[in-house]
Length: 184
Image (cartoon, rainbow, N blue to C red; front, side, top):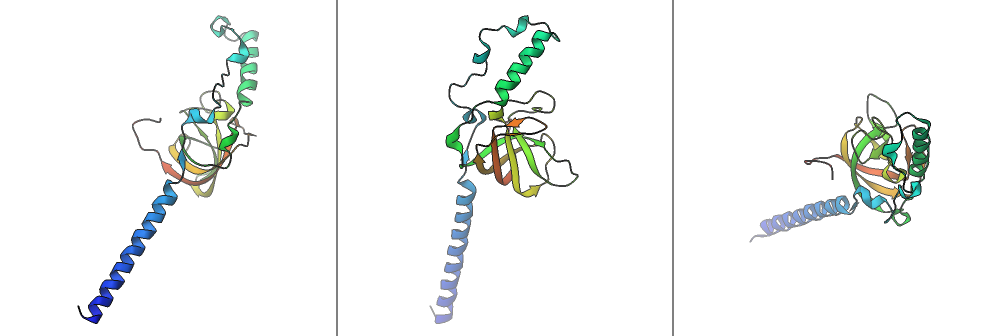
């Protein structure tokens, strides 16, 4: 092989190695988030009904003072739901539905991520340990109840919002459309 072909082959090999290295690094950065399911945000053994004892809610008349008192008690329990401190600072990836905290025709940065469709909008908010307050590093075009994956750094930091109390916050690095038959 003459000198110019050898030089070209060497350059091509170096470029190919660089591309492979760069794409490998990108794949590693994209994949170094721990995928969580919503039940992993709850401490093992946490049972919000335990604080209510053996109360049979089906026997309480709808719209009664008893029902209102039960709802108040449940809301207090759920708003103070325990979180898992060991998740603080972890890089995680979590699927969920978007509840925007700001209303804009463009992109949003702050929203609640919730585990089921309609949470906080068409039904009472879930327990605080089932709500994540997300602040994206870069605004994204998202709408109410869009299904998505959010990846970022999770913190154990509760905060009340107009839509519910979050038990966790996340500095969102990446948001992707959820694709799949149904949310896990």
